Length: 424
Image 1: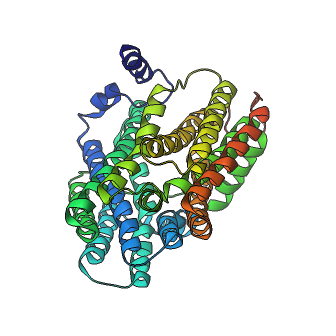
Image 2 (image 1 turned 120 degrees about the vertical axis):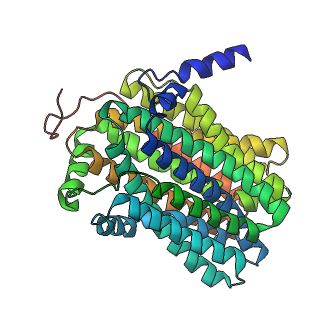
Image 3 (image 1 turned 30 degrees about the vertical axis):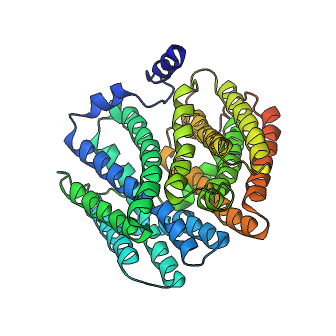
């Protein structure tokens, strides 16, 4: 136990590897506007992750199946594949503070309606899709707002703290969702989620700066810059493609946790919530324990190896229709696979040139969200066509094979000299 605590402490010292640190949070605490933005994001995410589990359980209770649950999971990430970017571009003419507040108010109204009005599954899915449209707009404006709010030398600390908060919120939110559904029902849990968005909107309005936007670059040069960068840097290209494989296959399993927990593991709603929390908990622990220092290609190979082993062992457990403790172990391994995205984020972040950094990250993020969306959809379809355990095992077999296949290509290559904005 003492060795484990020591490794966590060592990993969270913020030695340039990107791990979240308490020191980073303390450094940013005096910044009132960042504190409000950060708090608003935590409050809304706690409710949002609770609602995702409650929504899956509500769909099952109203006669929906695994495919419908998968479609609902897809709706949360689908707006990131184009529509969200268009809405974000349109919102750029308004102040960031106002845009974020209105996004929160929209989501508050939608989830309160879902939780208080009896409606068909079709209407419910339309409302979920409408609320999901606000997600990329809110997140894009929040990210841009953080750049405006914090000093340049504090930006990396702000990113560390934000990532840590995201993981912690998903962990606590999933667990809280299961407990709340068990105590007050899925409908009331969803209505409470609406209330968290209302609180988030209030906190955002307390930010002093309006966040006046500046002119954004056109999407044409940004897209070209992203493609040019990936063609020029094989390490980043392998990291990006492997991340899509990892998160896509892991999402196909995680999105069906309510179905697996109910139909295979035989858990009640409260325990399904705890089972749901295991995946983000394992991700958080893995991110804290994994070293993010060293060469880029070495870090990438380390992540690929860990992800391959986790996927292979997880597929074996799911193929055995794991229940009891083994079910929790299996979903923890899914969380370890998700942690691979954090490692590759460090690798790619180090290598992206200063020119068009934000736009290139946006393109890479779009690819990742495409993989998440496709994984959620296919996970539901395959689960209903076969069985939850077969779908989960098959997805992780694909993940293990894909990550193992990428290992020989994770050799170091210098950045191509033609990449604009890069200084050797």
